[in-house]
Structures are given as C-alpha cells and as structure tokens.
Length: 97
Image: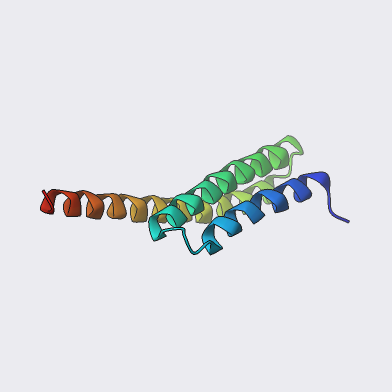
C-alpha cells in the first residue's frame, strides 16, 4: 500500500524525471532540476530527524542524521557544479564581446 505522502512524492519526482529526459533540456537546466530534488531531499531528511527526535528514538535519529550528512554532500556537489557552469558561461560571454 502506498501512503498519500508517498504518492505525492512519486508524482513530484516524475516531473523531475520528465525534465531530465526531455531532449530539449540543457545540461545546466538538468543540474538546476537536480538541485530542486536535492533541496527537497534535505527538507525530507530534516523532517525525519524531527520525527525521530519527537519519538525519543536517539539511535534512529543518529542513523538518519548520518544519512542526512550524505545528502548534504550531494547538495554541495550539485551547487559546485552549477557554480562552475555559471563561471564557464561568464567566461564565454566575456570572450565573445
């Protein structure tokens, strides 16, 4: 059985996949879309930490927090890639003036 929350997440994720698979989408646009997914992941992990803490599940909270740190690394990488792409665009724009 799929919960209503899982159903909403599946629908939202489908939109991200649609953008990534669209042949008209540029590489940078794909990175921007992945950033949206990573930001949503961050919020979801934070909500799980709060729920585990509210239940007094310290062991579970620690496990979720470790997983959340992995997601922070993903977010940092995507932001770095987008920054590099922005710098490359700026460099190209300056060279064509």
